[in-house]
Amino acid sequence: MRIAVPRGALMKDTLERLDLLGIDTTEVRANDRKLLFEDAGLITMRPSDVPTYVEAGAADIGVVGKDVLAEHPERNVYELLDLGFGRCRMVFATVEGEDPAAEALRRLGIMRIATKYPNMASAYFEKTGRQVEIVEVKGSVELAPLTGMVHGIVDLTATGTTLRENGLVIREEISVATARLIANPVSYRVKAAEIDAVVEKLRAR
Ligand SMILES: Nc1ncnc2c1ncn2[C@@H]1O[C@H](COP(=O)(O)OP(=O)(O)OP(=O)(O)O)[C@@H](O)[C@H]1O
Ligand SMILES: O=P(O)(O)OC[C@H]1O[C@H](OP(=O)(O)OP(=O)(O)O)[C@H](O)[C@@H]1O
Image (cartoon, rainbow, N blue to C red; front, side, top):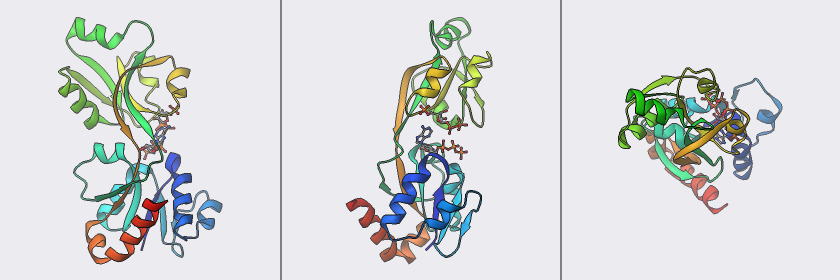
């Protein structure tokens, strides 16, 4: 069985869970730039790429944030388990003081919002009856409103440090995300016993 492991914020907890399953993660821990670990059956990648590899069957199962799954509902993967770690919030934030997004809505009837999650953000503002223009950025989303490029952001926050250090405040909470175990649908049929054993061990933890 091959497992897709996200680098970044979810990696440490993911490797700890793999240790519990009896998978040898020492080589992964010791190699910062290596990506494929054939003996351990592990591949490591950008977090947002995990569903892509799992959907394609390049990995049988993987670990990914609920935020990524919610942004790409078209991905044909099974969500098997809420792993509980990697808890963070998707929020709408703007610079502190008078809310420039509310001001833009009043004056122009539309606000500009930067995000790495265009689908989530559009759906949220549509649902709450506000017109937005989405500006998609790849990272460091907090920079966008500080330059005047946008009126606000939709982004993840965990400790709140990044928002605080950039003078941004949360205006609305959109959702909460944790890490999920996902599976390729065909793998889940063909390797059912093996994958179910993984789910049971991680659930019992
Ligand atoms: N403080 C946090 N900030 C952002 N995401 C977090 C945090 N804590 C946990 N997460 C979770 O970790 C996942 C990966 O976040 P991380 O910041 O490592 O990746 P990334 O650099 O945004 O990924 P990519 O480059 O693939 O877009 C997120 O999708 C989210 O579910
Ligand atoms: O509330 P905090 O604990 O400060 O964490 C939130 C920050 O962490 C993530 O960024 P990441 O480090 O993934 O960089 P990125 O913005 O370039 O994706 C997220 O996009 C926030 O910027």
